[in-house]
Image (cartoon, rainbow, N blue to C red; front, side, top):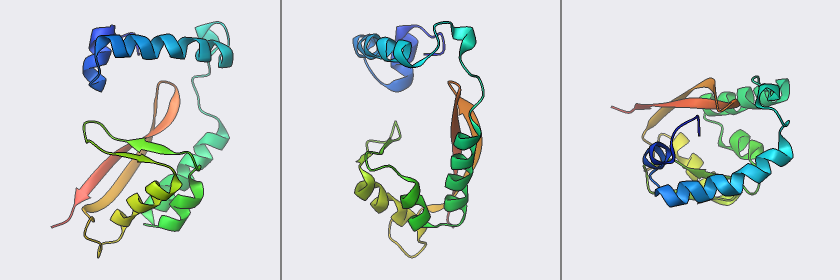
Length: 133
């Protein structure tokens, strides 16, 4: 992961060193199957399609549009956000997560703002919560 040692990676993701090594061992054959053989040939930029999808996702959050968010999600979606101890798996579970968009709902904590960026050569978002009150 980003040239880090197994120990550094384990600390960053709250796993044991053996768990990190095992995950990397399983990931390498999959990467070899899907990426060009030389690292310098890997694309550093996301595709126009990925950027368009990211813009739709940000727009749905900005509009607090739970239905638009649900429409963008794949049925086998999975969300976790270490260090918080929750795990949402599947579209139905994710739809329940969007309740935090409604200021009248008990789980509402404030408004979210996202800034597109990249991580490990993939499009991603930096998320910021502006708490209520």
